[in-house]
Length: 191
Image 1 (cartoon, rainbow, N blue to C red):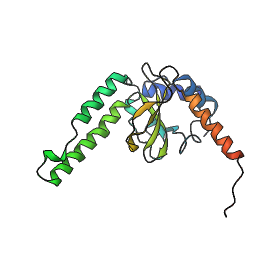
Image 2 (image 1 turned 90 degrees about the vertical axis):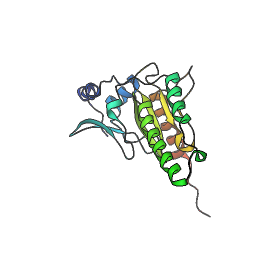
Image 3 (image 1 turned 180 degrees about the horizontal axis):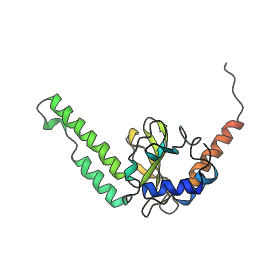
Image 4 (image 1 turned 60 degrees about the vertical axis):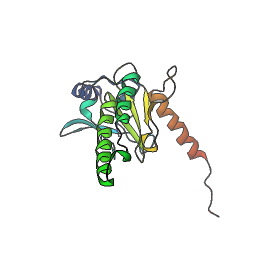
């Protein structure tokens, strides 16, 4: 994808009520609007009939949440913990069907809650099976990259450490370096 103009990036920012982190904004202006990148590539920012949207295969997200404040760690743990505490237990039900209905409703509520927990963040890339990378757009952790490992019973957590968070540029350049190293390796012939 070709780079976007300053006017286009500014228009997208105004539409969603965000100021994109400098590293990612620079990428959009100098490198491209998305495409090649970690996992199945970067979500593409493009103008559509509905305005500016980030799109890519399997990257559905709530665009209307982009400008909202990203939850702090304490808030995030509190709301996720409260949801976990409401998980239905089979022993609380007289039959399996009632349990599965309650469990299904609890899982749906969890998906909706995760949309809320990721407000203020942009889903940039996925690796398949639900594993995704997010860029925080608002709040004290603005500019940091996060990984969603929930499909494997992991957590939604920042890359790096609190002292040295991983931003967009470092995350993307690590992928570039890995792709270059893989391209230099000789191909093995099947035996």
